[in-house]
Image (tube, rainbow, N blue to C red):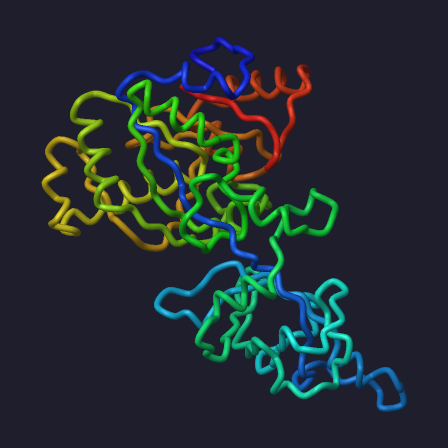
Length: 365
């Protein structure tokens, strides 16, 4: 979409929409197999009647965990969603992966087996304001290797099937590098090695940032007043080389093109934080005169972009089609204007475009 003009294209033609000298910025996060199945100890569960012969099995029964965010400064502590949530209280212990696991949906066949044979063990520390739990895993020398072996790819809920081994690569961008997300930055799923090579041949610069996608990306807006919506934090990092490329592009009047809303949030949050705290990061402060906004290179981002927001860095963006009442749709509306976005979505529905994670995309200038 350029101005009020809508054009239907296939993604193989995307390089033609960019200009020589454009800086295309990707989010290189990699999706973790963050969905774990196991069982609980039952030590902190609500007690059932001793007259119920099934109570012991129920208290030590199945549990499903979705790791949503590793807490800063530690490898052991994670925020997670847990099912059955009401039964999992602080102090409860959870066990994952044992030799006698049945292999059916990842659950243990014998929940009375000793916990000492579990490959991963976690204690529930507390409950957060969004209903998530904080888990502390017992230290193991190869945590991520065990997670890769035991975990399942957390496909979006509207994909109504169990994950398969193929999803470990299909639900990743071709440039995914840094593990930490519970969902793919889906605008990047359209790219192939050949398209990236064509972009380079056309003189398009590329750079990467990292934002580990969490649940805040998908939480619907439930408040009557938009400004009252609270968004989850997500960890981000911007390499020094990327900050330098952005500074040079802005100095030379070239466009910064963001691939996906996660890249937009990363760049806009980083610029906004340093605008508010001008004393930070002297090693990139030389960018201030030319760029206007030095970048904070890492931290916890919780930016919520909605209409009225003034974009600091991003000049164009590629994005998929998003759910109604989502923060993502609000961001796109802030960038392109509500009426223009509604017009684009009406066109997409009429032309039977596919929506959501594995769907089609649009380029906004």
